[in-house]
Image (cartoon, rainbow, N blue to C red; front, side, top):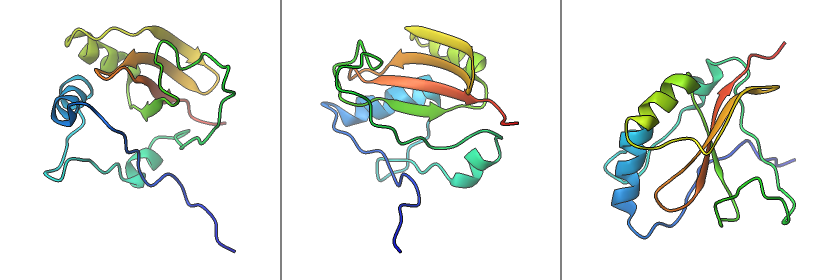
Amino acid sequence: MAKVLGVGGIFFKSADPQATREWYNQVLGIEFEGWGGTVFLPETAAAHPGAGTVFSPFDAANDYFAPSEEQFMINLMVDDLESMLVRCAGHGVEPILHMPNEANGHFAHIMDPDGRKIELWEPKPMG
């Protein structure tokens, strides 16, 4: 029987894709290829115990994505949340929410230049 293997990509529109790529590169260190995107290899995440990809619809009335007006947010796994937040601060990006000791790891929310909420997540090893 056919089944979904995982998330194959995250694709979104931007008023200025080049500026958005530059922001993600400078603020979060994401390296983009000449074709305009990047590939996160599963081996990289698999090397961090507790890492995984979550697929979860939220109730339409839920305000977890606020202050973004988008119908989605992007969760990016990081290897060191506190160092990532220092990097963000160096570019004038401060977290709008910081949750350092949750059951599944450490989390922080930032906003990208297009108004999307980005959830940064340092996974907590399971067990």
